[in-house]
Length: 115
Image (cartoon, rainbow, N blue to C red):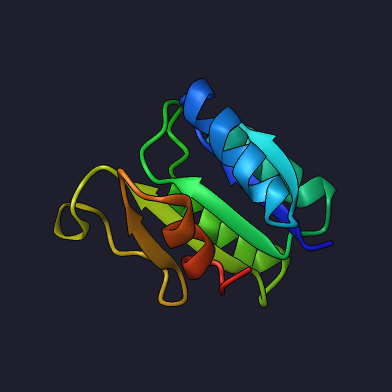
């Protein structure tokens, strides 16, 4: 089962999306901020997939999480999510997919590679 780290500070969105991802066949580990996500990445030797909100409290952004995910596992497929338009965001890692909020689960699954 593919391992996915899901980083989202909105508890309700995190709960609903986690259920959908698990039903799609992912083993989901949750983090509510970038600091926790980086700790999980270091402790678990990386994940197959990382889905992260870009703007989060605490000073560690989704871009920081994506970079840490790729350092831990260069083959990690990363999806970064934001309610802001792409033009309003910092430069994203070259191999990260971008998904704008609000999104449908099918769009997230497509960004993850169709799982």
